[in-house]
Image (cartoon, rainbow over all chains, first blue to last red; front, top):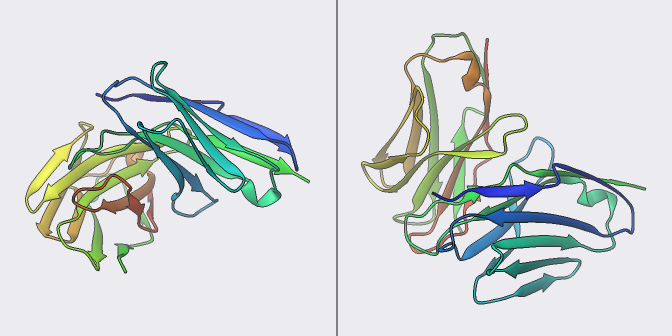
Length: 113
Length: 112
């Protein structure tokens, strides 16, 4: 089955810096890669996703890149703000009915002002 | 719009006691339903998922079980809780043909 590795487990940046979180996956058939943000004590919420027919996707300060050959994808946050502090999870799955998302172990991002 | 409800929000249970967590989805039909567990430092672990009534796939062998008695209802159970069952349990749903999953608010379980 699918296995997703996520690095780093913790990341501390200064406000205004960029943050990058990287994930690798094992199943070459996976073609859907979402990112979730979880604030303390709350449920994870989808912030951006990418499908394998796209190499990069941006949404304001957030971008995700995908390298299918190397089986890795990354989350990039530019101009970080204190409210970006949270746990971020990457995930992977096939686009197929009944296929569950497999998540990485998460990255705790701390943005200090 | 679709909503997902999960309860109870928190519970403290003694070792060896039973467990029942319930989840319902509104505003959609034939959803895929999931149970995930989040323990400290272990990310989001998939426990069970269901593509229809009575259809349950188990990802992790353990003393937990899941049932789907109705289309939009998903229940997580245990006959005898272990200390290691403590964690944050999240129910989630996706559309029948979709992959994006949406989480419920979660249930904090502490086994003492």
